[in-house]
Every structure is written in structure tokens, then in C-alpha cells.
Length: 69
Image (cartoon, rainbow, N blue to C red):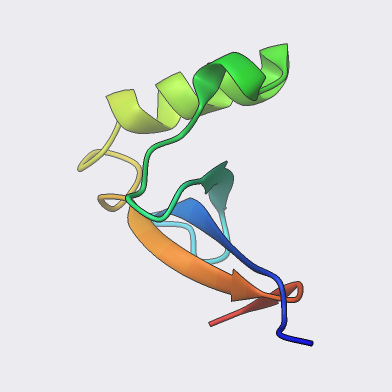
């Protein structure tokens, strides 16, 4: 049985290590905003808006069976 693989788009903080956001995405890094909850959707749009001012550019990460790779 192969491990379950998923992806997330991560926005890491520029000035506050450990502060950031992660959102589920597809293998191409696209976030399905229609499937995000209201709070997650607001956070996603906020993170995108402050790239370079508060967060690094997002990075797509692979998650295998709940473990970030």
C-alpha cells in the first residue's frame, strides 16, 4: 500500500520565524478557494496580499501520510 500524498501551499513569515500559513493545494500549487472555510479564505487572500512585506513567496510542499517533505 503506497502512502497518501497531498500538497500544501506554505506562506512562511519574513520576520517572525514559525509564523505562517499553509493551505491544501493540488500538485500544481493551485488552492481551491471555494473549498476553504471563511476564515481560511480570508487568511489565504491576506497572505497573498502581503507577500514580500510580511511573508515569503509561497512554496508548494509535498505531504506524505501527514509528514511534510
